[in-house]
Image (cartoon, rainbow, N blue to C red; front, side, top):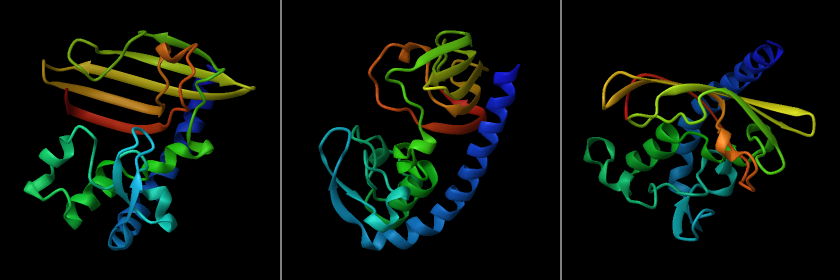
Length: 193
């Protein structure tokens, strides 16, 4: 019960940080896009275009402003916008992936390497067909705790009710040398899966 109380306090802090920074990001990203700079993806080494250093927190060091490496964003921009248009870049960085580099700031990440990861509920939960369930995951490292909750209730083969709060650590991260994991606040009553 104590872990649930601690988790609620942690999630309220994370939610408040999200609300403030996501709202601020709508304006910062718009102001920074005209000053975008070339860069290298931190995940796969490809060339990307990213926000300038003064707007780093609101940028995306893995995918930049032009979307994911698979090209999904380029094929699925809203309203048929060109992927390199101001609106598509703004939507990707400010709406779809707001404050993306926040995951690199220790305050907003949970360490996986060297952590003890425990859970209650289902071992595997994903917002994919056939992987519905719930889990409450606790990550402990050096006396500090990070909490995550994941609930997926599948309505149909293509839609689900999804709640994900806190840090995105999963039970199968236990014992791995993975990078620190970021956090989220997601509630979607009818998510496409």
